[in-house]
Image 1 (cartoon, rainbow, N blue to C red):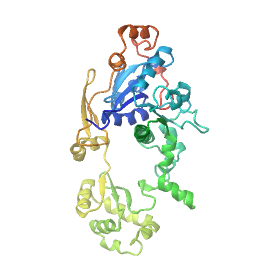
Image 2: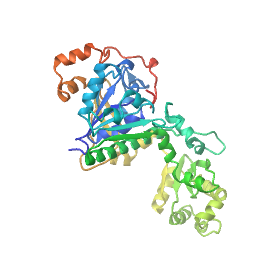
Image 3: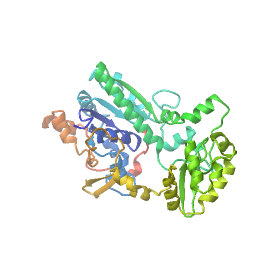
Image 4: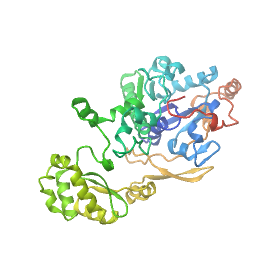
Amino acid sequence: MRPLEDVRIIAIEQYGAGPFGSLHLADLGADVIKIEDPSSGGDVGRYVVPLQDGEDSLFFEAFNRNKRSISLDLSTSGGRRVFEDLVRNSDAVYSNLRGDVPSKLGITYDALKHLNPKIVCCSLSGFGMSGPRSAQPGYDYLLQGIAGWMDLTGEPSGPPTKSGLSVVDYSGGLVAAIALLSGLHAARRDGVGMDCDVSLFDTAISMLTYPAAWALNSDFVPERTHHSAHPSIVPFQAFPSEDGWLVVACAKEKFWARLADAIGRPELAVDARFNSFATRRANREELTDILEAAFRSDTTVSWIEKLTAAGVPCGPVNTVREALADPHTLARNMLVETEHPRFGTITQVATAARVGSLPPARGRAPARDEDGPEILRNLLGYPETRIRELRESGAFGEHSSAVSPAVIETGDANV
């Protein structure tokens, strides 16, 4: 068995942050049942372009492998009753809604513990379930600005800059997955479930780590650095070469000495201006000018070969396509293939969690409500008459037509 095959999670999730967290749990074997709102066409990720057709998109595929889907309108009495039966047969309710919504929707522990005393209710929202911003929607881009990340990113003379990836969303999803698993462990140990209140805001603030510690305990002012340099370790940054860029990381004194030898300037290692972390930081600009001139004299590939042979931590600044084709990417089996009825064979990146000897599961993302009949009949044991009554009452919505993405309000934590 895979590590989480005995775990069932009801996921009221959409877009990126929430689905990214539960993707890791699904790849590790958890039965993740996505509840998709039929009134909005389900998870908005289904309609993200490019490479989107109907209710399918490669964006949705990237976040929803190995999950099951059921269309359920929780605003109807019938939909609510089905949801409550799922709670009775599950370990966790996982959501990424606005911070004030779980209480209004009745998916907190207090609202569900009478159905299942061990249920774990994990909420991933933009700003959390308390505090002055709890009712505000949260998006990765907003959080990178509010939490100070953009002020630290980019060139000193340039504008505040967002990371090229939705790092707050993805980190928030991972923190939520950790919180959920911790809650499950405690619930199985103690027989009592709980709420897990995780937010993108808290995640982003917590990841300020050592710059926050410096700022909180001294007059240090975190700021953007030239060519993404480390704020205190020199040299530890990107350098332009003759034909591209490379990153050099001298996080130990021995690496600096090796680098000086590799560029043909061994005297720099013992130069009083550069012979320690402190002196190199004090003379950062002078040393950076020397190193930039050296690295511009040869190609990136040549420098990577020389520095690797010398034992200096380094690497090229790859394009996305180059990173995906890197021999180490392939050796680590970080590309996976799934078969899709509309797109054919899809290649995408694997999740990074590796637990035990079994490889992660490899199943495509579900069509909207693809698993509804099986869940109702086999998991919940509903007879056909019961299913028909629920359908006629609107519990499953109008499944026959998708909603245009133009009328869907997109974004994490904003349902």
